[in-house]
Image (cartoon, helix red, strand yellow):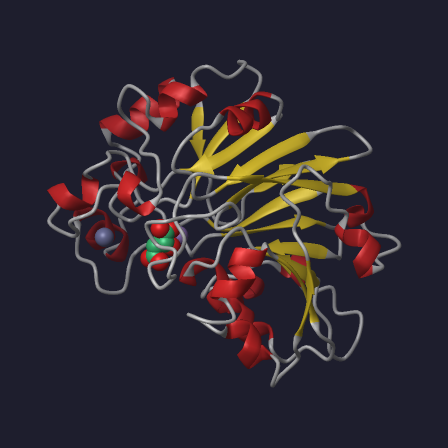
Length: 312
Ligand code: MLT
Ligand code: MN
Ligand code: ZN
């Protein structure tokens, strides 16, 4: 089984369409120290059937760049067997619109608060009802394992061996949500993907505001952790004059600082593979010659990139 990184950037992508910061300018002008990235999404499974985890606005380009996702078993076909969402953010849900040409309702796993936001403030699920429709599955937060293959009927697929556990995260619902600033359990989740044949586990949380004891337990018992790489410093956007909000205000834990993401990753076992994902275009680690990237290298922390495959 594989986890395939489809998009490793935060909302806006890299370069961001309206941004001329040092990173965006450099990647736009072809710098060899920078690598373009599409917006936040991964797929789990293989070889032909995949669970899409987050549906980014860049989904069509991501599918084009990932031949694994088009097994071509019929005149109309897709390797995307279903979708699971970690939140209702624009960068994780807009791609659902692009899957509307399906012939059958799209199997979709999301929590109740996410389904609520996607049926009210941003009513994608209602609109899809006029196209393929969605077949929604509950996403329990009580530790119950999700076995997507049971519903997807994928007899020869690696998905048969995929078990998923969802964890509530301290983060933020989207800016358009009536719960912005007052998050509830289920607005944001982290996921443990487990291969039930091998026991191998990946912890995935592209938006993570705080390391709770349950999150730490999941991180400590995973073979691979792939976590929030949005910002290097908590006040990155303020310092650059791009926002008045800190990383923490919008639900992201920055990498640097005494209780920053890197300090947590440093406490994991040496054998744990550690990666950052959902990297914002302002983050200095995007420049491979920056001191911040050198600090990542020294800490044994990798930057996920579009097209990266990880064995599960
Ligand atoms: C986030 O990850 O905080 C959001 O995707 C931000 C956004 O919607 O631009
Ligand atoms: Mn995001
Ligand atoms: Zn930029």
